[in-house]
Length: 93
Image (cartoon, rainbow, N blue to C red; front, side, top):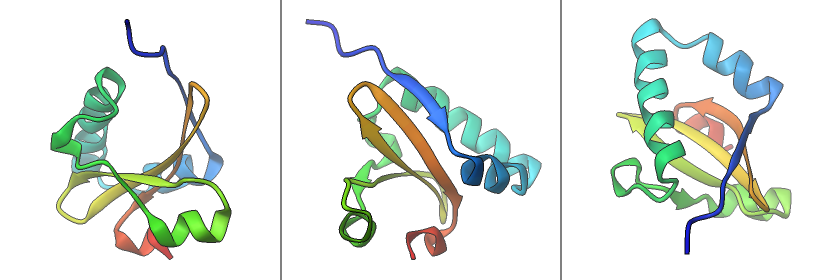
């Protein structure tokens, strides 16, 4: 059985934070998102649930590691993956 076809969206907060990244971080993020779109469970991205944000928002919030301390947080609603923010661990607050 083929994996579900995901639709990828991003919030205005994600776009604002992404635009503020350095060009090197943007390139690393693009590469990570390429991997993520191919396989959201790619172990090199270290996808994991963020318990604190999940409890605060009442919906499962997950994160991937882009490089070093650069992370992206997202939620999944059916087959829609919503990128919500990108930055350091501070985005977990």
